[in-house]
Amino acid sequence: MLTNRDQQWLRLSIVAVWLATAIVSLWELEGQSAELLLAAGVQDPLLTRVLILSGAGVDAALGLALLLRPARWNYLAALGVMGLMTVVATVIEPSLWLHPLGPLTKNLPIAAILLVLARIKP
Image (cartoon, rainbow, N blue to C red; front, side):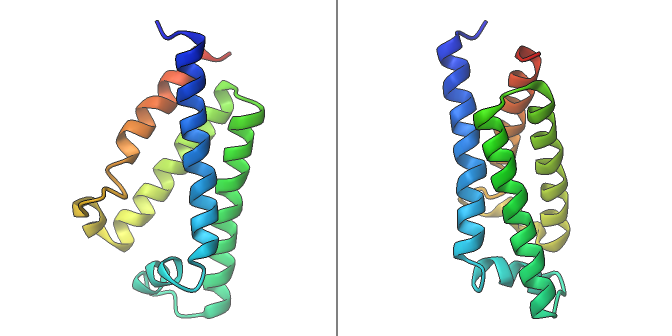
């Protein structure tokens, strides 16, 4: 069984991923974030901006929810959003699964952590 300290480290690492993803998405608003949507065929700059800002908002909201209110439903929500984003990214750019830094493969251990934390929290 995980100690409270172990659970805390896992939770804070997941919070860091969600918040960092939100920040990087905004940082790369006109760069990699926009390029990913362009690869998906999104040509409209306004729609691109709305999608990136919305995604960053979801990432930030989940990160803050997991930080401030760790609960089973927040972990499961994060798992669902991560699953959806993984499917979308796979459709847009399947080669991300083969990237040496693992932008999509990292989601496998993150999913495991979220499931473990969801099982522990009421």
